[in-house]
Image 1: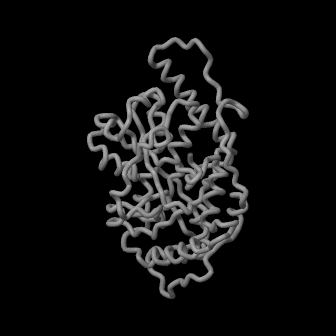
Image 2 (image 1 turned 135 degrees about the horizontal axis):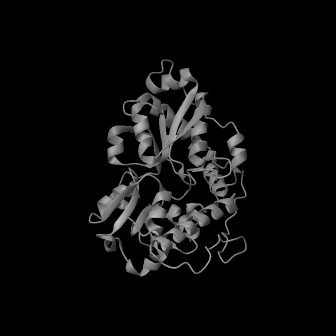
Image 3 (image 1 turned 180 degrees about the vertical axis):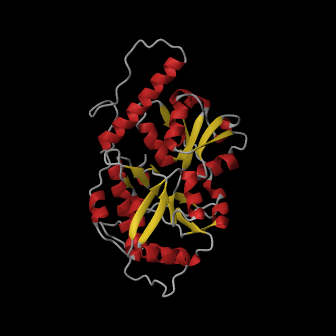
Length: 338
């Protein structure tokens, strides 16, 4: 799995670089660079997950045992229970929370295991609908899906327009970092967020990173994208100067780029100031505004999951969802970053 993801991303980056060189009128004198093979110059991550594997956790029937379902369910909760299905919307481009298995096409991730836990607790089947990140909340609002589960962070406008779940975190660390990714050749140009004034910066539409760029680099030329892969291709094609990402995703893209892009958090500790957002508290799920009964039950289920401690050594069950998902996606957990 790790080999396939690394090879696919490396091949994508190599092809993009070839296209860029040709389009700029440069003579191609050498063959297209090959993906870095096993045993190449790129150092292998030392982290190894010894706990339960993703397939084991996905096959289990975990559920909350002490959650009370209202006798007179209404709204979305009534719809879910009567249909026997919990339909969630997600944008599967944010490992380890949600990602597509390149071999099987299955949508996996720790938030997908979380969604399955909620469905099991309600006694219904989980149905996953993949869509662009910016479309997930629209799908919630229009009733196409029952719940948005897509690595959402708390935002004031989201809290006004949707019912948000309690915050949840997969690791014991509450530290979160969001940063900027640039081409390695441009690294010396940037020493602070202020250096991106007037620069073209990609951010995923409706994401926290969009808000951070708008608030903290107000003079940047912000370009909204539908997928993170699109942003990386924009960067490699010199269409933009940078892309805003969370530090874990930024680090993993950089490590699989054959040295073409770098994370400014890793290289220079440049990051957005999250202290400006007092309500930041991990990820949240989103339901349609007014569905307080439904989100209350979801919160009860979530509370029991997060209280399941020491499932493997000192890690709770949801933490195991996260670490197993990192292992499955071939990336480092955020608390294993250097």
